[in-house]
Length: 72
Image (cartoon, rainbow, N blue to C red; front, top):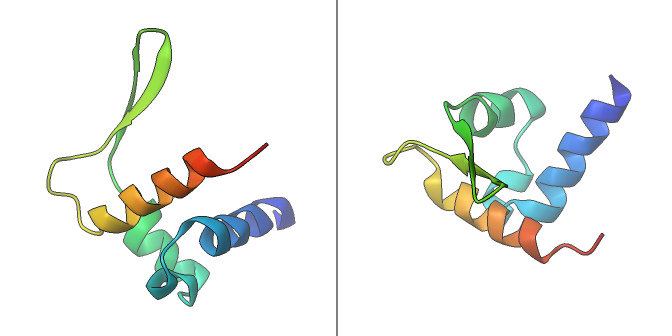
């Protein structure tokens, strides 16, 4: 459970816009993480499809861009 908490905190700090970094865990889950989506495979690559008019879409786009620039 502690690992999951730490992963969400690192996601919040490294990947989200500043306005979302001060949200509590409960608020972050309710506003950003609990949204419908579909994981599909195109060309043997997983792609996350979100609804067209999803709330907080700019935060998701920002996070996905930041994730793609992370070095592992």
